[in-house]
Length: 461
Image (tube, rainbow, N blue to C red; front, side):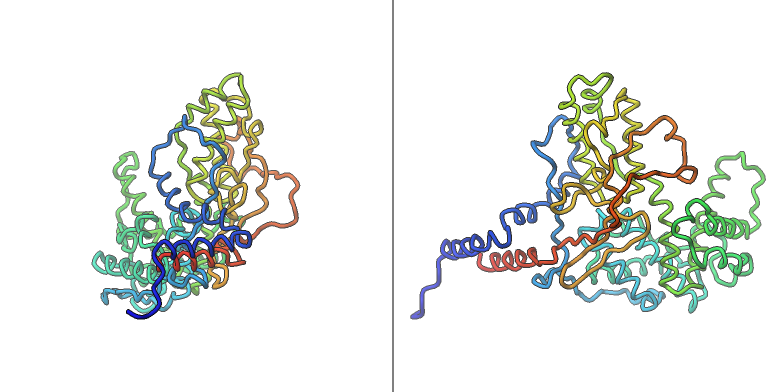
């Protein structure tokens, strides 16, 4: 009542703004704030909106700068809640606590959709397989019944969420309780498995997986497939006629279910870290073999670049506008970028675009990946399995491959049917450095300062 009069609302706001302006030159707040506070919501909104290629951006697409990574000056952004477990799951979570921590970082909050294809979902699925495999040492079972599968999947989501992972992992990675069950495989216990499968032969083939050659040699993959086939025939259900499509489909589904049983058994015979390397390297063959991008209608590109190009500027403007939409989807690997460039090129060739517009418009492989930070082009992840890392001083980071700063190759007719296992990709001479750590929050903690200032501003208001 008799004390000093508190500052009015406009004065408080003015004081905060003056403080920010004083730091403007040192922290470059004019650029960072603009790119930071709206970018995640803008990316999400763009993914939800239908593509309108005739509306061209006035400039190059804004870089994507995630803001949800933790910072020492932004501790409220750490999700350290206590998980609410069902008490009904029979799995031994403590046996894979290190893997769970890795998965939580790989699938960190809003980053998960952008890292889903290459890092998050392969790691999440591997963790589930290893969790059941390691628990089978106590339970003797390589699968869960439907009731326990519901409880356990909910519990693992709770544990991951309590460590900062996205709460939508099941949807993002298309994982369901049925993925923890035996499916249609007739064998789901350890004793039954080992009575059918040559365990020593399987371990010899898959105890260590060559990260470079396995995708082509398929030594471990073939051993897993053979074991799955034996399990699928364990109930004596030999097919009398493969000509019946329904029977064939059911048999293939059974083999696929048994393949999961094989992977769980294999994970039980390896330590969790070794099992993770095996599973991630096996899944990586599928990851690199498919372009995960969705290609929208390219009719505007075809209109401006088809047949004989009349206006190079108009053509390249249409190409850059089209590619800018691809850059808002997800991070991809360097090998995936080759596949995506080939797919788009073939799509355009079918629309009578015969000119190498990648060369004409200077489209590089990095242009097919998500744009990050203030880089002029996207970050391509390494083709070998990798994980994100969490550092208390710099936040979430992951490795970008530098051996990809090359022009996107325009596909030829022979590329459509050729396999990467039957050919070699010749890259031009490149710098000695092969990779670089990309910190989603800079090491100089500029964003940490902005976080603190933002929180202070909200408290004042």
